[in-house]
Length: 111
Image 1 (cartoon, rainbow, N blue to C red):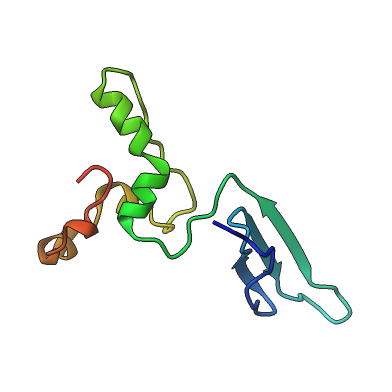
Image 2 (image 1 turned 30 degrees about the vertical axis):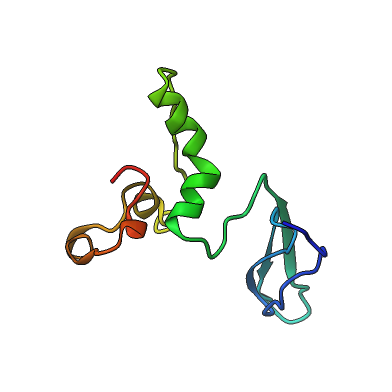
């Protein structure tokens, strides 16, 4: 999408996503008197923030799934910190949430 390069309003610490769709900024809180805040910028191939399951699928797995259906070996691999949403992204809601699921849009990549 078009980008002005501007950043979203950021708290004094935490994670923010730049409008360029590729940069994540992490601000670590001050740990003591006189210590400067630590800010780290990470450039990525893309940042998916605030998207629904279908948009995530289209941006990340659609080509691999279509290739697999065409006879080509393909892998969709999810990695990240514990609790980041890998299982939800790949499989959709689990347990009681899965039973209450009433929308096709809530499915995971491999429902």
